[in-house]
Image 1 (cartoon, one colour):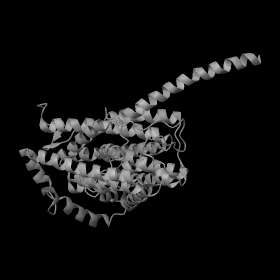
Image 2 (spheres, rainbow, N blue to C red):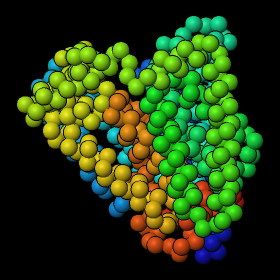
Image 3 (tube, rainbow, N blue to C red):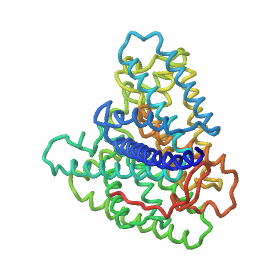
Image 4 (cartoon, one colour):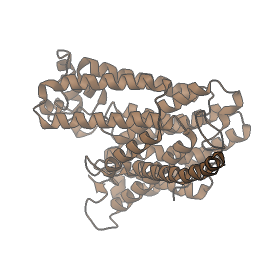
Length: 443
């Protein structure tokens, strides 16, 4: 009898392993598709949303955990949603505010999922997400360039308002979306961890061209800030003279190539004209009492008298336009509580993000890529509405997941910060042996 049990046990275990492996492979494929489809934003619903629910449910079944380090994020998000729902109560009979609030709840759920997902097996999952996201950026940027040059001969396809828009409705969202992909490729080239540097460089050039042809002032300025912060943090975090020399040389070479590329693009007449128009600090729709800034000034005075705000998405009913400022919008949509919590979320995340850059940890290299990109969106929130941008919630979850890993790792020895993404460092909570160097490819 004992012999029979012993004989049967290995076969039972063996039969269970392939099923587990197959389910995990499916879950990883779904997650990669989930991230890649973030670039499809032609409408309020996209393939991203269709894949989101089965992906989240499958990974919840496989097991993702809420770690101590992400409790502040959870508390702030829930408090913000509570403020929005309270402000919505007088308008439950209006379809659009209710729909907007439901969408906000859904995006918040994705943020919490991302925070839980990336907090375990961090290296493998971050690499998978960043590669899928970067491939998405190259794909969308390439279509944006093709559309802008009108090579397809189809009007307004991947091209809107005389600006490249790729797979997005809005060129401003398109340009900003590309920044994280550019940072990921630049980080690999800076640190010498890119397995295919020529492919990475080609992908980077496509993305940078997409950002430029979006003619988004916020994307231009935000991307510049993100790149400076990323390069500065990599330089400051390195104790290798050779790596620091490489960073300086690569940065100078990039500036020269970028300048040559911009000059080449500006030699095209319609590109030059659009650049002159968009390079101005303000546009016609910004100015005047009924312009964007005029509406904001008048709206702030009104919000001082309304502790519960105007109600979700009611700013547009008063002024005919969105506030084009997420900080003002948070007060308008969620009242004083919603606005205060939103600002608290930004400030708390900023503290966490800069601490991830400043302190040695196994995940600092990932923070050098993700936090500058998220900071760019926080800065852009002063001049555009980012509450419905799916990728912002992904980056927010990533930053807090990295903080959870940092807290579990404790304070490593000083040399540990040199570990680049996917370079073989084993994170707390990961399983399996360390793998080889990162394969950074956009193909």
